Image (tube, rainbow, N blue to C red; front, side, top):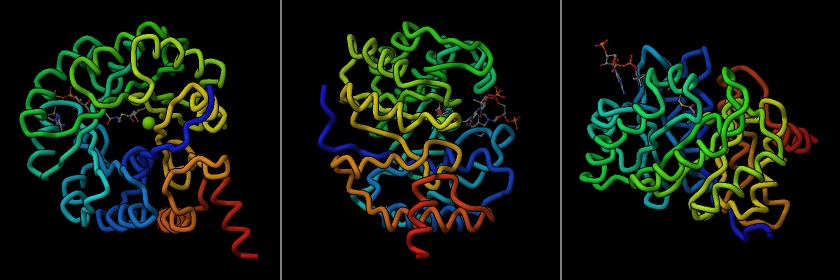
Length: 288
Ligand code: HMG
Ligand code: MG
């Protein structure tokens, strides 16, 4: 298969990138970051999560952040939601798109959401009914698709089963999370080949963390299978590096200079250099 002509980048830095940071990032900084990401032309920016603040304190300001951003008509601003309580908070804030998440292994499901895989999927029913009644768009995530920190290898059949369920329940897209970045290009391709026997490739997204430096290779491999939606995390915060496909002649609509500015902004706040190698190289080049 050949590469897609255009790839949609779903930027998750303000949520996935910041959720693991121990330094509290004030709402105003998150708002500025999100505005800069929108200036860079990103079509989808995940802004935060309505999860328990006891579980993830960094996301406690999500409602405030959402209310303060100047929402642009050509940008979607999804919010992560784990349950009905999260959905209620999202509706109160005026959110128009949510992202639900399940895991491919029982242990990760318990550790991340305090329930089994089956319970998490059952829990989605009420959330999805209410979200659809309010006309929200719903994206789905599956964590640990290429490996689990507790259980090691993951069954691609389980990933396929959960993917089916998320589509049946009404998710418009399912994002495949290599949560701990242990996947390889061969495994990523094998997974997508199995999933696309039952699911349309246009509705799958790659969400590959770069823990072992394999994210770009894995993204390259799944784009060859037809995946045209890639999650990114600015400056390499938490999640993926820049999903930089510009150099391959694949359109993304993202302005690298402006994206660099956004990465610089949040890295300065956190008091460190961007983790992304693309950002480091481009900043060095700029400095001459
Ligand atoms: P629980 O403790 O079982 O929840 O947590 P509970 O229903 O028993 O409620 C306990 C307390 O939490 C109650 O408050 C609830 O009101 C409150 P109390 O009465 O004790 O004062 N509560 C909430 N508060 C705010 N927002 C809510 C909410 N729900 C309950 N939505 C729960 C279950 C799912 C809430 C918890 O496990 C949780 O918040 N988990 C989220 C963990 C998380 O955010 N993980 C990171 C995001 S997922 C990810 O990064 C993977 C991804 O990037 C893809 C990939 O890379 O693979 C998406
Ligand atoms: Mg993630």
